[in-house]
Length: 98
Image 1: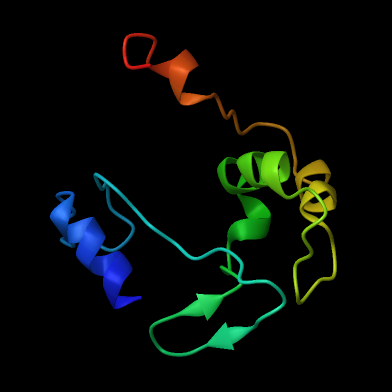
Image 2: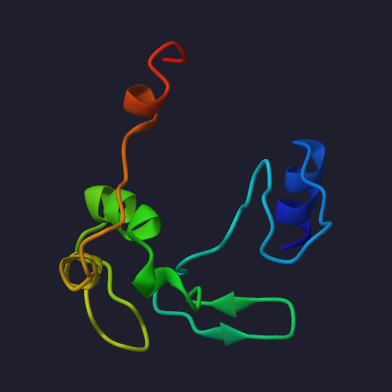
């Protein structure tokens, strides 16, 4: 976790406001079937099941990966989301930065 925080800092992240805007945010979403709960780290990420921007790309590379607490696959979690969140590939949202 300390390495991720160091990378964020090196890339310009300033922790000024909790849940505030940030230049980068690195999270550990899953780690196989491991469940971790410490004051500094929770795996699986507690909000991953609600976030299309996490589940959609994860479903592209590991659709059958399972959430260790719910037992649902990433594909099932993605299919269970309410409509409304839009996720676009970087190249579509930043056409001059391929």
